[in-house]
Length: 80
Image 1: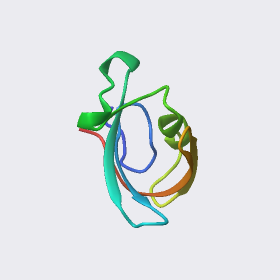
Image 2 (image 1 turned 60 degrees about the vertical axis):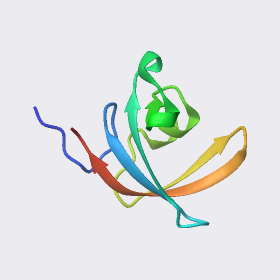
Image 3 (image 1 turned 180 degrees about the vertical axis):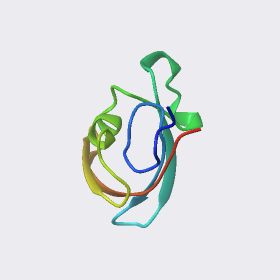
Image 4 (image 1 turned 45 degrees about the vertical axis):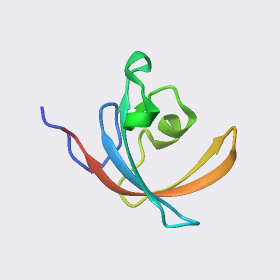
């Protein structure tokens, strides 16, 4: 079945907006061995992916990373 573009799940391509800087970034959630952050492929085990899974379009997500805490808004969810 085709997945909807509303809820973030494994395989989704997500566009995020940093709530502080308004900077946009796009990632696809992939398996651990496929991950390549330089090419926008985010590991399912990363703190960012774990925070995004199950969230919906328009949700605000707070991610705690080694560099500190960041807040993002989910502005697009696609399945390709």
